[in-house]
Length: 223
Image (cartoon, rainbow, N blue to C red; front, side, top):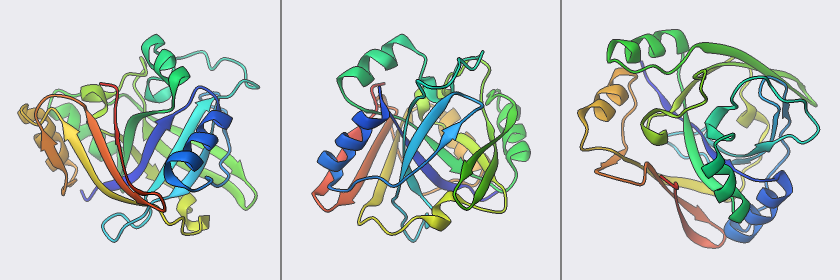
């Protein structure tokens, strides 16, 4: 196993709200994204890669008002009332996603530790250059493990979305994970080969530091 940061998830009440917030906080307008039929969401994307995670990107995601309800809880806690109330005030750092070569194998490692990442689902979305396909873990209740400190696991198909993203001038400098006083967090990260993170005791579950055209920007999750 050799997992790395794939993307950082910012939840928005509305996608246009997220675009305006990104331009104000980071000094950059995010690039295009697409629609997710599986979860009735849509997104905008921004490259934030570093030598340690060269394909990393920022995802601004919101419920798609033009899509029918998905018939299940959406990913990343987007249906949780507390999350929706917080996003109405401003976009929120919700979660992170780790890229792995074998999502089934990584999920099995976590189940051996008593963690349930949920089933591995197939998803896709259209792009101007063709269909993006991936497989990822999504719990049936939409919950994030350890409040979001443990990532969703994703395995991309032949094409990665960052392949078509231009450099943005924004980089992810660090990602600190809360709950480091529990051995479960460290064990779960080790099991999928994810290293280089600062593990903190207590909350917040996530603290991400970026270098941007507006200088250093630090975001903390709501829990």
